[in-house]
Amino acid sequence: MLRYIFFAAILFFVFPNTESAGFLKFELTADRDCLLHLEHSSTYSETVRLLAYESRPLEIYTQGSINEIPVHFQLLHHFSGKALSEAKFQIFQLKNNGLWDSKVIDTDKVILSVRSTFYCENGYFGPICDRRSRTFAPKSDIQTSTPGYQTQVLKFDFKISDDIIIYSSLAFFVLLLIIFNCILCCYRPKKSQKYLDVSLGSPKVFSICGYSADKSGNTTEYLDAPSRFFSSTKIECVV
Image (tube, one colour):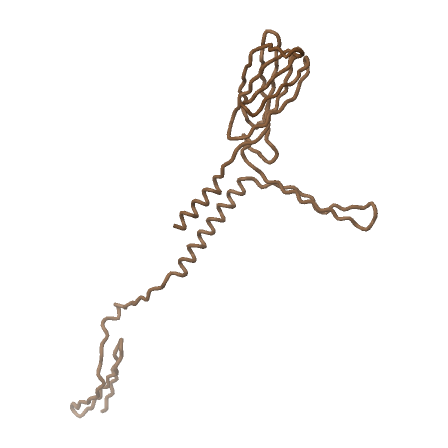
């Protein structure tokens, strides 16, 4: 049961729910003065003024597990706000590759050039900005007693990516699982076992007895000693 809990915890930390976060940046240029109304779903709606042949930067914040977004464009008269064209939507890819994509919206009265690129929000990185990074920037300044003299002792920045956190969590839980198994093996009750060495054969029992025999004037005395595993015989001859 505990192993299933460990595996579930590992899966939770190794495969966390992540979402992308970044900005879709536009450079808008029209060939005449006009108003441009932009809409993205129900979360974004804005109207900006464009001057003839002047680029206007604009950014749309995006968040979620998406790879592309549709944006509606509608050109309006710069003074009355009357529609100069129907609302048209364009689809933009959310790829953090540093490249600019160009589109042209051509109407009867206004030609609109749309250049777009996508970049990550601070703290995110990756091809679609779906990986988080944690930045640590501890700073410490030490001032000496000498007026006008300051010494900066420590200033460093480093990032810990999601991959490092994932691998560290996985290694920690694997180590914890190994320790748990070792504890189970150490505290397992020991069973007494008896071993019988079959190579020794069945034990022999000898009785302690002494006897002598006379033959042809010679006396031979035999003494037997008991032993559990072997027997020894001492022979003494008296001539």
